[in-house]
Every structure is written in structure tokens, then in C-alpha cells.
Length: 174
Image (cartoon, rainbow, N blue to C red; front, side):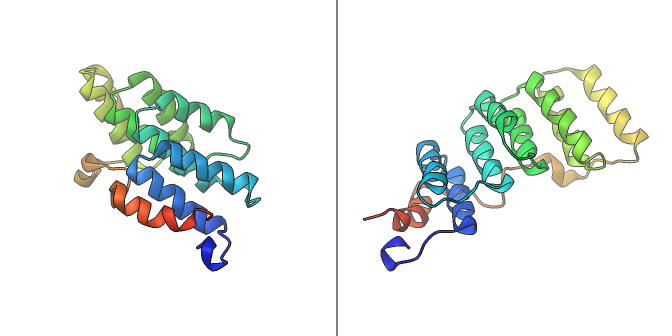
């Protein structure tokens, strides 16, 4: 991209960061996040931060992902919080899952997926009273569990390292 005289913009960096996240390329993701700001003067958007939260979350760095959300200079959207909640399910982190779900319930009070994910975190930790309590809360709010929600993943497609590098490598300055 750069070798052809093209300058990456906000959208290009979102794609790059997403590719790094999908492939678990933490160092590369941070590298591009930093050059986006420092070399190309692209101001990070909530989507850029959500990509970085997803990247950290997928690689098990839940505390770092949470700290990044809390330090964002822009208001984090549900995508950032949702990435963290999905990782809390994956890594069975009940305490952080509860904090994250509480924020998501404020942002998206009628999104059943957020309740189901927290319920699944409780179930994995064998906290059946909390599972029952949360399912009752869903009923009270008229929310119902959709079967597909149990199969939550961080995206529609996982990228392997080769696919991610095929996207990222052409962007490196010569």
C-alpha cells in the first residue's frame, strides 16, 4: 500500500487492526496502533480501540483489555465491551465478566446475547444460583435465549497468521 504511494486512513487501520486481532498478533497490532497515531496522525476512533480490546482479550490479556477500555479518551461502545465479555466467557473470568456485563446492560439493556454470555460464564463456574437469577431477569425483561447465542465467537472469520500477514505486510514502509 505504502510502496504504491497510498497513505492508510482510518478505515485501512481498522482493517489492519482487525486482521492482527483475528490472528492474535499482539505486538504487530500495537505497532500499527502506534504508527497510526504517531506517523499518520490518525486519531483513534472507538472502533480502533475496540479492535485493540479484542486483540488483547483474545490472547487472554483481560486485565490489559479492561484497563485500555477504562483509559480510552473516547466513550467505548458496546463492541469493545462485548469483545471483553466474550473473552471473559472463554477464560471463565466471573468477576470481570460481571463488571463488563453491567456496562453492556447499561448500553444495550435489551440485547439478550449479553445476558446469555454472563449466564454461560456463571454456568462454567458452576454458580447455578446466579444462572437462575440472571435467567429470571431475562424473563422479567421479556428477553429470551436464542440458540445461536450459545455459539458466540469474536467474529465471523478467524484469520490465520498467513492471512493476517498478507494484509499487514504490504503496509510496512520499505
